[in-house]
Length: 158
Image 1 (tube, rainbow, N blue to C red):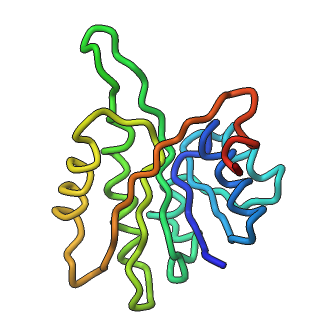
Image 2: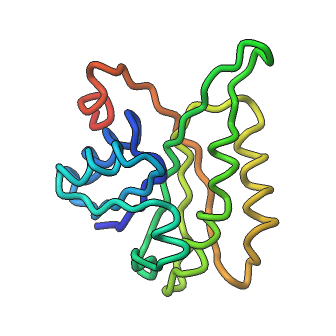
């Protein structure tokens, strides 16, 4: 069993939390949206805002094995590309979660969001700049989501 923090608990994050939990993993949600946090709370998942995690210390991060990033990447018609601002703004929170980890195992950072070409490298470099390797060892994985909104829970599990 792994303990996984899911940053972003909308359609993709919510379905992924349910799927991971059904496989026996302990899951905690982190989201800025009260609606998303309430939806997870109704399923008995602990869920916090980023401020509750970073400023108030309401989440014990010492036993986390993985951080899953399931943040939105809306398409911007004027730029004709996906906007990865939400993902890039999560670097400080990821750094906080990594620095709190107590064992010697690397933190798995899993990018689940649909992103434009080069985003994984950009995220990895931002994490490198933000986290001193002496503070935390980590591995970044990209696991894109391909969920249909009507079947998101079933799709995430299978």
